Image (cartoon, one colour):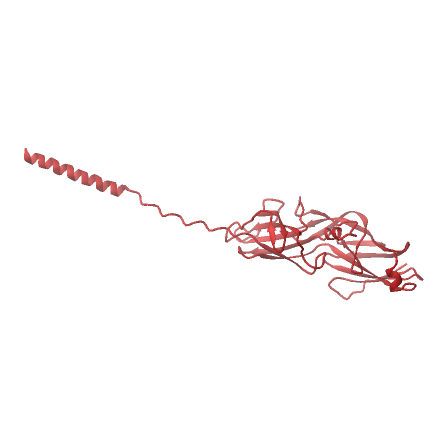
Length: 303
């Protein structure tokens, strides 16, 4: 009887030991915590003007631009579209640095992207045919500046914490008209005269392809009143070819001096017109040189 009792105790101890061993073997390993996800980098930009902008001094406090960011896929560039880009027309305002309306980040820390910007900021219905107009009356600085559309891009950029430099350039053309005294005028009498200037027969509306800055003039022709600044009458003009017409009218004390000429206004170029006023011939002599000074004399005489 005692032997049987001992065997039962032994059996129970062995069973308990086996059960405890089974519980240990069936325990799941403690999971290792995942490393924290790498924080996405904030997108920062630093647009810079190629040449000079409307004010000739670069961007100013309060200026706003629109930014598009298009990601690469498998090493291939994406296509700029009206929407569904990684960033679509985010407004950045300038106050010493460029600040977005809301923070934007790279999609991750590896994917490259193309950056497109334009100035001044506006609503954009079509990136392939953005509608833009220069003001017909540019006699005030604000109206003149609002007519200075600029575009720029930087492509295949790797994610970085640094600001992305984006060169922007003028898409419009500019006419700079200088008046000089001829027969019957002196610098003093001309400075005391009542003078107004008009640029005639030009289209003021355009569509612009934001990815390339390509401009197409549209609509009817009109007359532009330029801004007078630093002894120069200057106006921003949609790039276009103007058929021969009364291109420039200078009115001095009620008398009109007309330049009949056809001309091609080129994107991103400043065309200088030196107008020599003569009472005896009522003529206007014009010398024209483009912004990049190609040494070509496109001048003529108006009657």
